[in-house]
Image (spheres, rainbow, N blue to C red):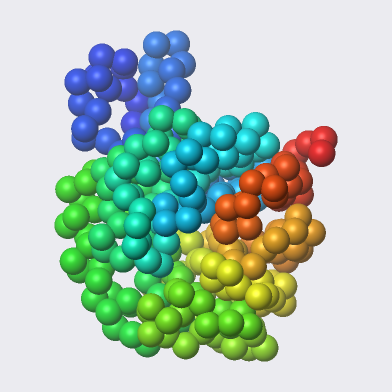
Length: 285
């Protein structure tokens, strides 16, 4: 059963710290609150697939936050992931604060470490690197992170994270100390994803990695989606709307693009991405 709370406006204002920030709206004076996870599921059902843009505090200057978010929102983006494998110069807390000022869309932490937790976010992908055999990234770090997430009162979304060979050693692969799934072994990815589903994961994330030379193979996306009954997120190396559309056609439920839009010369393509990802909608590009 979905966790949906129905409150009066006064109830919410006096008890809001008890609830995750989620999708909210008033209907006849009653506030309907929906968890971010359920909001994403609703987006997938209504639009065909969801489109998230990854913002890396180390790579996106604060001066670009507002114009990029405005461009994303008017182009049809469904939400934002925030995080990175390393945080050398970026201030996560301040960065999220700047993002939240500019958008009412979901702001979800995509953590590269247990230091990337903030009560200002709406949710966090609770990632387990199920493609690897490094116990710290399967469960070890999670034991330390879980009480921090609870204290932050943000919604954890359990996600099986599968690193995929992409033609280059990505930061995620290096930092996790995990071998990626070979590109020509979709059956390994499918079996791994199915194990993640059976372990109770809500999403499976197929990751080629930031700056990947090649995106996750379409055959792998299809193999995983055919085996699993939970939504499949695909990210890394997606630089054209055509590539994004192929992932969706092969079963991806959520598409993530990231460093491609750190170059503002590419911003005009965001609407093209949203259009092909939201295949259930009639969007003029």
